[in-house]
Image 1 (cartoon, rainbow over the protein chains, first blue to last red):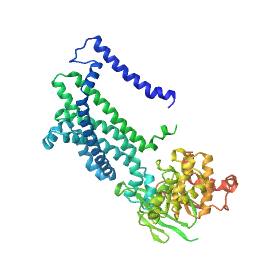
Image 2 (tube, helix red, strand yellow):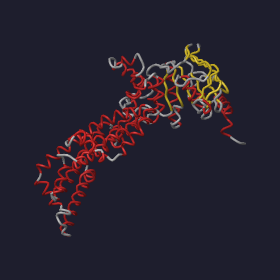
Image 3 (tube, chains in turn yellow, brown):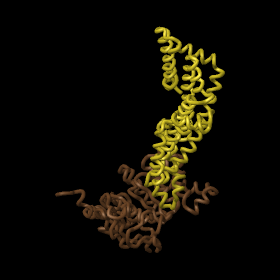
Image 4 (tube, helix red, strand yellow):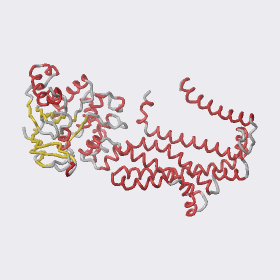
Length: 257
Length: 264
């Protein structure tokens, strides 16, 4: 990493992030905003440190339920995407139902899940899964649909079966779409988990924030938000890294410089 | 020369019923083993349809189509194809792209794992024969357009097909690269004695490379003329500046003519 790259990739985001916190702190002090409305940045960080044990404990629950839901969504989304992209008839058959299902706000589904699975981690995992599989399905199906017809001719003329064409061309071709959709899916899964936790759960950052709110522990609520933002960044970065690792050929522009 | 491909009164259409579009009408032609034929004609005249037909990708509406005396019922496997777009897989390097057909066609399909080394050597030799020595490990985006097209032709040849079908393979290349590839294709065909069917709308290309040029009419495509090119082989690029060559090109141009010169 040369000097210029270092400035762009490290210094610039760090300066921007820190200035936001500084600005926040100054506004709170200058306007003497009450603690119950908006605690200052320093108070939020204080709460973060003071309650680090329960926060860590609950973050862990949120993290693993998100990842579990995301993992199910990945497998399910990939399989369904391949099925949808496989044949026009399957696509036409499944699509309306899929879109309809995706339009249901998932908050509305959480009570049903709680009814079925009880209060606990299962509804959170399920919500994360339900909310995040859709973009994966759509992206994988799109990737499969964009196989060049001429290339398909080349292979069909050799006697390739539909499965051969999928394995050799369709699936590898749709991988960039798939990994691209994971970035969207992981953020959605995270939203799903937290939504579910705030509706009904006995652990997790969502539940922690809910409890803190009812006890007027506003700094803890904000500390929860900070933790969520941080976890979101980590999860996003993880999937982005996986994407680059597996589909480097689709990023040749950058890799080639 | 014995006839390898035989078409008799072949018609072909896309779609069914009232909305069907006639692509080819009453086409009869023979391709001898080892012959190099070129099909020229205005765009949309069914040149590519003829290719799909012979490779068994699309059935004829009526007429007889036989290859080596046997009627064609489905994809042939003894056909290699290359198009204007090289269609290389970007996640595979040149060598792996060339090896792709072997992963599909029997008997190579079941052997490719155990005899990987021999197959790789064969593919590298083939790449070398079209001037791509040392580029086997390069990915498509690291190759120029001409190199990609050479790789694509190697991919069409690796399983030693009876017939090589080329659909405007040099259409997207600049004039110099195109002429370079003409020579590469000429040498390749001379060395392997493969039967070639070249679809193009470059008349100079057709006359330079082919033994026989077929001119097709506007859609639905019929064969207007069969023209044997009696220029001795091997042909050098210099040939393209001779009177004999120019005369043939002229004659063909007149047959297609109307479109270009339009309303006069």
